[in-house]
Amino acid sequence: MATIICMKWGTRYGPEYVNRLYAGVKRHTKMDVRFVCFTDDGSGLHQGIEVLPLPPIDIPERVASFKPWPKLSVWQFPLFDIAGDVLFLDIDLIITGPLDDFFTFHPGEYCVIENWTQIGQGIGNTSVFRFPAGRYAEIFERFKRDPEAILKAYKVEQHYVSAMIPEQKFWPAEWCVSFKHSLLPPFPLNWFKTPPLPENTRIVAFTGKPDPDEAAIGKWPVKAWYKAIYKHVRPTQWINEHWTDKDLGLNSRGRSDGRG
View (tube, rainbow, N blue to C red):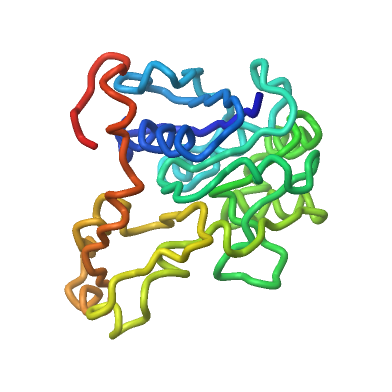
């Protein structure tokens, strides 16, 4: 059985993000999958999702609330009963193609996206990564010993992980793309052209803004008026076609908001 994990904390993303991710996994895998969500609030999640509490980690609130440092908690060992090769997915992803190859690509090794904005610099983007449970527990242990030193030395969690695993393997570039960095036409073409979905794409990541629900309707929230001149996205219909949990039905914990 393949193991896929994700994390949801705080209030930025509702349960529909996890449900739609789970639905995408179900649609695009042929193997049996154990899908685990580590969260501080499991209400509204589909009953097929295994809900576990957030793994313990001590992170200063000044960074825990707006940067993805809590993701370091999945490197601890033991991590509940998680074993073998584990695929981690951010919840603000859209799955558009087959996922089984993510488990057969360099099995037993750490695999990750090559960060779209730092090509050739050895930096992985941890929106999608696979790791052998337990092998790199020192990532968590070192942070646990002196979190302030790590936070001072590295801007974000993925820089730290890349430094700790220089032998990392990058996924084929066409598998995982960034909506903002790979698909969005450059200004001023973004006012006239809708972001395309390449045929061989399997996962679309949404880093920063816009979020999937915003991009689907052509909304890019900005605070400064002048940024709205170049931060623009046309309504992108294929998002609604792939980012849906309608095929899961209403079998959720606590509530179902009815959005598909």
